[in-house]
Image (cartoon, rainbow, N blue to C red; front, side, top):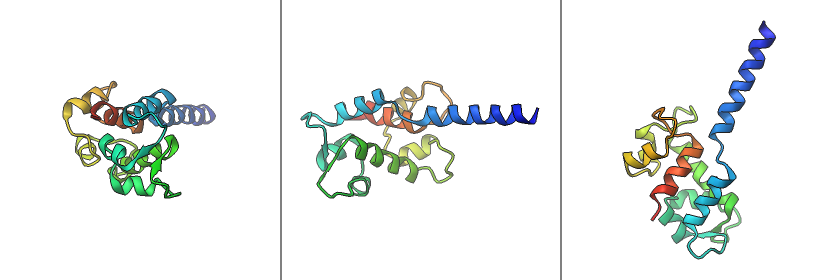
Length: 133
């Protein structure tokens, strides 16, 4: 019985971890929206327009080349998510999401298909993509 419960806990835990990880399709959609010149990178202006903060941009750009590639863009979004999640529960409620740059409740709700009142990292990336200009 104990072994079954442990296995069940591992499976459930793994599914939660997987659900929070943005898919390649979500990352691709975000890059497409954030990168209007289609050069495969975001300069600071593009990143700011997408909703990435200057602080997150600089932290996610260790090579200091002035651009974020796909991996660095996700690192910047992840840093913003983590900074707005002081309780470290892996989700942002509406108040935390606003601190992380989500501008409207309508966007928050649209990015929250499970309607649990929180955004995980993948849903947060979707929200940023939805509201990007």
